[in-house]
Image 1 (tube, helix red, strand yellow):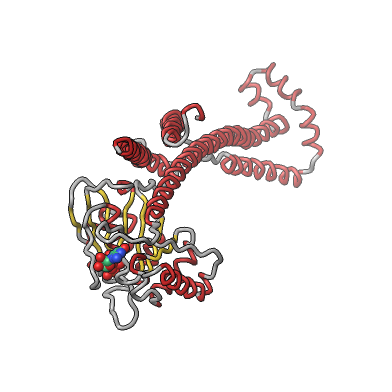
Image 2 (cartoon, rainbow, N blue to C red):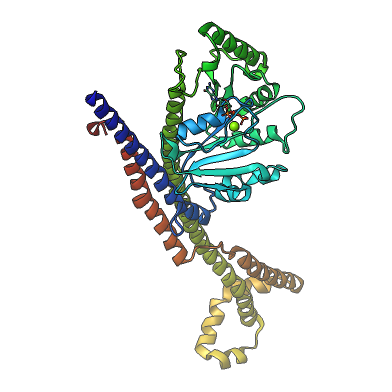
Length: 448
Ligand SMILES: Nc1nc2c(ncn2[C@@H]2O[C@H](COP(=O)(O)OP(=O)(O)OP(=O)(O)O)[C@@H](O)[C@H]2O)c(=O)[nH]1
Ligand SMILES: [Mg+2]
């Protein structure tokens, strides 16, 4: 007996240790993204990359018929009576149930403040008034890593909801990691509204949906239960979107020590599913962290390459521009020299540069002067105009070629490289460490 207790205690200790390691990993990942100075969100933004920080918990939505036992399941999971339960229509709005430091209830607006991801809920008319959060200090099972979303019981007929319940559930489904659909054997197991919503949710998120036959202890004998199950599955399969082979619908009920039942209870499998989803989320978060680091690093490489190319382009543009400007200035000067050598007064030349230099200049220019004198006056004018136009063209082209591309300031370039270095030498090793810690929970040390 004492051995058994010891074993269970050991299991509990290791379970809570596991929870705390996983909790730590998700929190650490979150802070690697949201750090006000060097968080990946800020670094990404400075590189024009939109990064969303990972969530610290998974979201599990419970939906289904009125009185199917949704709220009771949450109370059972967290081992605290936070949600009202009963045969009347108990849950009339949407409640987020989450673990926190202090037992508290929050209103709709406070809820949206706490869950910015869900802010767009306020666009659905009337929902905010029927939205609230219950914070519980419970740390039972994996509750520290789960946010449950309890939804209003679904009924057909005249029941009027003060908001568009179908749209809200569909909208919430997009942000949930798991969607539990509860069917109970007594109530309106085949409620059309439930089936309609499930069918639409299934179009987008079939991998997130789990069906359960809840309150299975109330389904009578095994044969009755099988009949109820068959009936529900048949009804589900009538919907084209839901007609799939291998429909799984575990039977679950809240264990009641005062009313032991011989019916198989698969409620522990629900807990295992939640745990599996948490583990998957941790792996996804760590993998995403690696991908984000890689992208940041390659964006910095890209920015540096663009800057290097721009600098090289600017250098070449400057050389080209300067060459053309020089030509633009030289052409008229050469023309003037030619005119001076061919028809300028010799005395003026001698006075300007001395007799020897004037002689040398004239004989140096002799070949072109000979050519110039061969050309008749009219064509000389044409040549003159062409040279002047060419000079103007060179000057215009030099401005065009000399256009430079923007480059990074030395300080910005240094900051970019620093960010890359930070991501590669700090964030990535940290992610590696977190991965090892995560794996250490299930794999022996020498396998790592
Ligand atoms: N026998 C049995 N009764 C249950 C079980 N789960 C819930 N109940 C009872 O069923 C009734 C309805 O349960 P709730 O948890 O309020 O159901 P709900 O789906 O939240 O209902 P709404 O909020 O009205 O949609 C309550 O009286 C519960 O005590 C179960 O597993 N077995
Ligand atoms: Mg309820």
